[in-house]
Length: 95
Image (cartoon, rainbow, N blue to C red):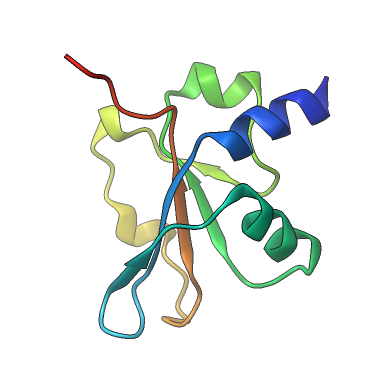
């Protein structure tokens, strides 16, 4: 079941941002993220879904910062500005 949730969470990967190197943004695939996790690379993974969804399953080491709560994200940022930030959620809604 844990693998199923991990696969679901990885498929929901939305985007990554590195706030080093002039605030560059790039997409990261689930395969790329899995390699990063397996290699124990320094990375902060942020699950932007609600607390209930996070409790149902999330990417290992991900911290939950629900966008609905408008948190002050600075408290979660690493001191090392070269550490990539990976954000994911369940995706947008159309309509």
